[in-house]
Image 1 (cartoon, one colour):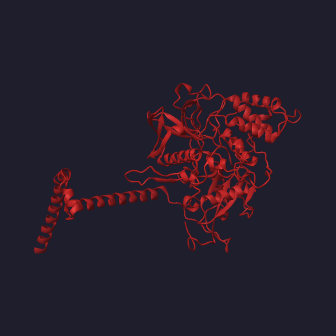
Image 2 (image 1 turned 180 degrees about the vertical axis):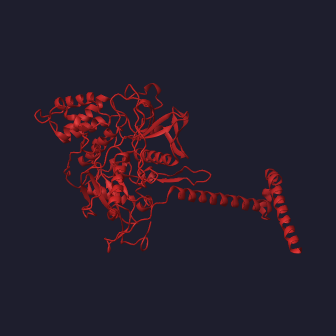
Length: 570
């Protein structure tokens, strides 16, 4: 990435796009080289008039299609250095166990928006009757009371609320809307929705596909209560944070150390890749520390994932814990802010995109207004994504099934930042069925992050002059109109070569260090090494390995010396 001026040059500004929980709303933000992730999150929360910021986070997808949460304690530019354009999604990171303990209604409204997304994308997994009730709340909040003259026919079928929305469940939604929820205000509707949603097993769960020791496909869900596991549509285990002693990972293996019924257990799950395993580990560590530690000052510095050729990953918790937030008795020094509710239901008609997003338009350029709200005029669409299930607890007999039948899987739209690429859909005959809708993998960039990438990519192709309005290209304040093109991110081949060279260099350093240490032990005249050489084990090593190696090298050196002497004599 080109840089101009010194590292701390205050004139350098980078730009990024933040997609909000309402798909029709985005923020154009700026940051500088010295800004950390906390700065950007605080800025977004300030624009949304949120003071309870600890529950939120910014997520992005890297060039390898791996999701990450923006680390609040690290430099932004170091975390997204290979991305162009830079796209974040504003999401709930820590779902509060009881949303009604939040101090402000505007914060609960953001939780409500997130849960609406979870219901639509299949992460808020529940029985059809519960899904119908949740959808009924959404309909009441969006269109108000049922009016026969206005709401005719199957009016619910015009909206996309559930991942799999059948005619039978739409009939149930209309019945609830017309009879049960009449007269309820948006605030009452949101409270009813939250009260029901937070009681579900999958509330706040972000599922991750893994395999067990037998190779069976499972899904991990991590939330405030612990680690949930699901196979098919059945919850099998629930590892509560109270029973978890340690969490670590090695390569692709995510490992949970338990102390259950006064017995120690170690359970491993194989992730699709090392990067995915590291992401699962970080998510689990953050969730466990946020909901269990009394204070952030008690958070340990953890290193995991190390191996023969790797130092491992260091994790340091940043931010407050839930207990610190709840024990903060200071009331917000302001009146309850006004909530600007917008109609955000997605229509199922083909003429209206299922996932609205904001393509970059020539007349918009770079706006000085921090918040913009635009509707997509076309081009974006919702793609199916890999569905997930969760794995469940050591309870055994208490394991429960969410529904009677299995999960129905769908493929996820995998976007490549360099060029768009999609997976072929899974054959419907080869998937497990779920009665009315199914649980889906929570790679949200299939419907939001990646769609924004797609629209940007299209716009860059058609309007190259507008590339920098969402890119990470640095802009100088005294020359804002300048357009500086970033070089393409290094391709996979160059990254592979660099990794190989780094590994070879590391191995060479280790071998030289071992040789140097062995020479000191077996050949030096220091008192400590002389005493060490009298040890029987060291004598055995010297006779078995060191002396033969030394004689071999000496013969090689003498042979080369003889050859050189002969060549000189001739």
